[in-house]
Image (cartoon, rainbow, N blue to C red; front, side):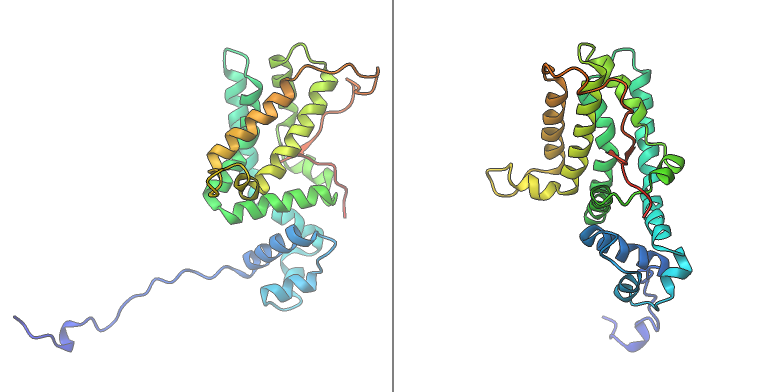
Length: 252
């Protein structure tokens, strides 16, 4: 047997380290988390710089303003989500048979579910950010409409075709409720899923989404109630949506 000697040991070892995030990405990560937790109005630019461990001028250098930072956060994942939704809607519209309500809801949900499955907590943080922007009305609607093609205008005709006996106003109202419920549920899916399992382990993401889509589809398909004339106007504008929720916000 050959004796072990230092000559047999490599003189140098190449260590492949994980690259550090850029200053811009670090600011986006910190802002995404803080905005999701506290809202845009509750977080100062100085606080984001401090959280990122960067100089007070860093955020202004990369984004110019808080509104520029919010837009950069949306740009981070929204184009890919909207492109995936468009692909799914294309497939539904090209199908010979009318799509079911559940299929339409799946087209809204699937890009978000894929984000959660792919990025885990980071994906959940992004959905919580969108929920918070929506709740606080901190989304610039003009920017959203000009920049993102969310495809929500394509959802209503598909649902109306699947539910020909429902009025346009009822479909529009229920679709808006379903979309908002969908996003908020996915943003907190692990907490909600834990309540739906007798084992204490919680439902898997796939099982949770199945339950959620069944629930929302049943709500859309339920017989319409007799309502006061004009209380759900057919001529009301359809909701615009961002990643599955209506974009009702105004410039901050």
